Length: 171
Image (cartoon, rainbow, N blue to C red; front, side):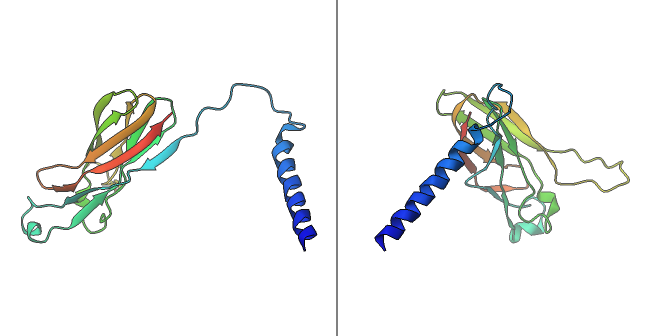
């Protein structure tokens, strides 16, 4: 019984070693600079939430709770692109497609900034339907390091419940 487990460990170790060495044997790839960091998207760990449409009238009596989840995409060293997706209740209330203000701080360098993720202006002259809930991404130069960001959706017709929050590593 013991001999069998030792044999299995030996075979597993041999396979792992071969898998690790194989890419370097007989490689015909041209030598060049190492590839840059791959882009990675981080959804805000805490979404932005607000009560919808309190300035519209009757909706304020039973306002729906709306959630927006911004994402922060890194790839280019020192840059972050903030994006927004449709609100969670887009089918019920398409007029809740509001933008967000993002405040960020690089915890490594101390740099700070604010940017806005705005809704794409609606073109009423188009004959074909337009996406009423599209956003313009905002790219900022945060510098490399650990970045903390908060997002807020605040308009006269929407009452904030909680800010969004994300912590990410920027290459």
